[in-house]
Image (cartoon, rainbow, N blue to C red):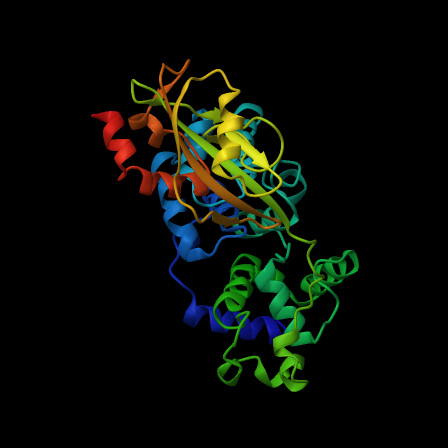
Length: 353
């Protein structure tokens, strides 16, 4: 056992968090935790993991669920393709493999939504296959300790760090080691202001010796953020019904529900909104801008500048739904947060009375 892996394993035995997916080798639970924790902090992801296990204790039960129910349970985590792929793969495992998870990296990586990292995690933690995991925490630990300045999101960098991870991993304790190095990055070798003074690896850390802790790992700059202007129409008819649409095209929030949407190139004012909405089939009684200041909703590569418009109608909406039924539909966080405040409004109380 090399000094690097031995030190990390010793640290892990003393400081690891008591997380529920660490008490099992069940590939379903490990898979679920890994998918939830992609681009999600443990503190945020843990309640979602517990809810999923409560609703769907087995992969067969997840497979049998309605997609809308899975998306509703996922609501708030973002990156909804993770939830859709989770559901799709659960059905694949149930239908094609009698509910049994593949027990090797090569088979696991063939499943939808399972890439190199997730396949390595399941294969190593559940089946003892000697595959190193390389996530953001591992990149940071390796880049700093070995002083590697190759960009972690470049083709060359990804290949280099994977080979380095193979070289330093502890194959005889791969399940424990992979969890240990990820935990070390999450708690000890943190992105900002790590406690290098008390780090058990500080004597051999190249970044510390060269005063480069703050600059490693290196990452190529992201693409420019796209600005989009959303105008949601909250129709309310004389019966107190409203309207939702399901997003079926490719792009953000696929298969989630939203109010009728008008996307524009700039902020839309009230006079322009009257002109846009009056051309629709509905007979307009009044249009009220919910709040003057738009909501800025930030996604990874785009910012949504959003306004909500309450559109009261004279007639009845075709295919409308009651306001009380809105909470059962999976919606983006942007709309969920709006609904939390809208439920306390005059318009809501007037419509359901």
